[in-house]
Image (cartoon, rainbow, N blue to C red; front, top):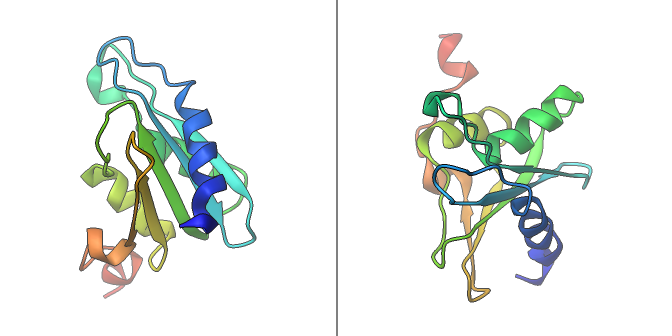
Length: 132
């Protein structure tokens, strides 16, 4: 997992900026583009909980807003002691831009798990299905 150490470190840095006055649950994400650029994001809560944005989507939206739409990996860390998996909405958004990539998770002990995106969201619904 040595190749993901920098990506996980960037996710941990991003986590420190999380705005979580309600849940106190910080999450950071670091997204690796196909040309090896890294975009980071943190979760941003809102009193209207539906307006809250997850760290994964923050990182993806930052990249997309700058014209980057192809990714090969995303690292996700949190203030929890356990591994934090992306929620269903984030999995759907990740799948829009990273069908073959890897999702990297780190827990508080520094253990790392790596999943192929398709293992976390098999049979992804995407643009191809809309064109049928």
